[in-house]
Length: 400
Image 1 (cartoon, rainbow, N blue to C red):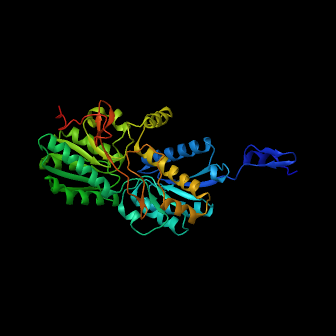
Image 2: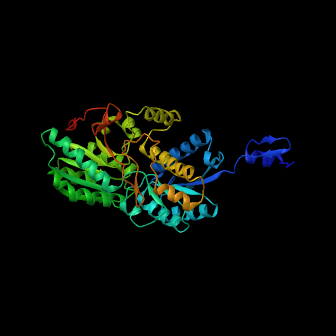
Image 3: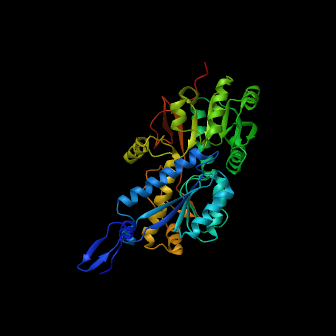
């Protein structure tokens, strides 16, 4: 009979006797590399992505693991990109040496450009969980897959909703200033918005870029106040998003509306901590389908842990589920078979407001954004109609 010492027994999990004299251990676990910025300027959102990914692994393991691999459990290798692309790439290199079967990450577009490129050297599948830059899936990397929308998709969805809201209110918004972070994410989104806003009869008066981090928005707020646009459209990361909106209120910059496109700081923590500042802001972003009962259960599970619910947690969760689903269907951890399974994926075990999953060059064609608004200390879906749970407040109530 094969004998295991106590350390080996604990390491392999509970062993059972398949028949007298034969000891059978559980299948060896498979390794997923979760690479996120959990320190530095992007640490809040990166940590939320990690939270969702770890929760997905727990759910999968609790449900019996990867059944096609004999119930193999998933082990999470957690890497900190430190909000720096070169560190993220280095973490990927280290995890590749530890034989991970796939990666998820890396929240920001700049970091994800580096981490997916590093993973591509080893042809290891990488499922993205936050970045929107089109370039990530337009470089021909066969290992890279994004279940979620790109900049182009989110801009088109945002403008469609904005146009409908504006027209229904008699078109009070005719001019806009765009404020964006100066990296790939913000710059690309602002350029797309600037080129398309005139098509819905909104004049772009100015594009204002800022660094990440930025600690003081007083000058930018005064510049906006002097230009007197009808609305400000924001695309940036969490800390800057909150600080900019706070400064606009402090400087009494009255606007028909404050919009954001993929505003990282538009989350329940901001809405609940600063309800007066957040009230009435509209964000075009990722969110769950509020009409699917699983959404409320997932949000409650996150909040029960003492964490604010954010869309980043959704992204981290479903990036892991997508990768696990591909391994399940491939019946293998062979990277070529997993990549082939991702290429043909019709993943539907989710509660996102999406159409059918179909990957073209690594990008899911069914991914869509929704319009959200801060109302009564909560976030509500206000468009499109099939997912809406509340009516939009537009124009925004004037500052007192």
